Length: 271
Ligand code: I24
Ligand code: DGL
Image (cartoon, rainbow, N blue to C red; front, top):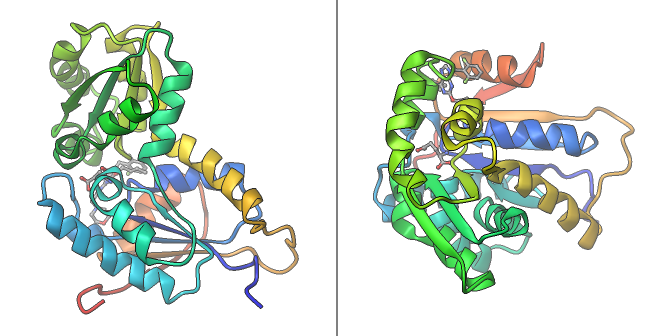
């Protein structure tokens, strides 16, 4: 018998997907979680699609071997290029971060003038645009790659005056299109949310793709009757990194406000 106690698997290019996990721990406190972050090969944003697909398969195979009941591709770049292929070839439910974000944007928007920001890989794929226009053919979509944002967050400058300047300069061309809704199509961007909101103006709806994804995960657990209602026994959160356990734990324990964490290093080459 396949048990509902099996964990939900989350994969990401590094630590950014922890923004999705934080939301999962809040919305789904009884679910066991396994997270794998490919910190050794992060960032995925500037990499060619074929390589991101290969890395995403390696992560997927590793987590499938851990008997997960559902797979969440928490990385926008990986979702953009690999979701369809992975969905077709594995026999558990697989969910990415793009469709939930696109759907939430259309729900929030009055004008259907929607802006999307993400990594080079995500924007180049055009997947947000095609999801939006598939659901709302009248949608006017303006997409912009923001390659400076991930390095800003990863150098601890999310609240700095440099961040304000970089975000304002980068988003200036987007403001011309007067979107009423902006999709933060990258794991790291919620950390820049106050600055992005300030630059875009208070009227603009900001969509956190990761948070929307967890709401969809919750609905999917219901639909497939996969909820873990039996919270007897230990709840487990296991974290794997392809990089340093110590560095991963220092960021993750801070971000998730966990005093004790299970972090293990693994190698993905050969998976
Ligand atoms: N935030 C991120 N990545 C980092 C970082 C950060 N260093 C400081 N902060 N480093 O992503 C990435 C490279 N590392 C990863 C671990 O192995 C070694 C290489 C955003 C985090 C999203 C949850 C700033 C910082 C922090 C704690 C919490 C949040 C945060 F130190 F943004
Ligand atoms: N996780 C990536 C994303 O959401 C951002 C970091 C990276 O480029 O790998 O697109």
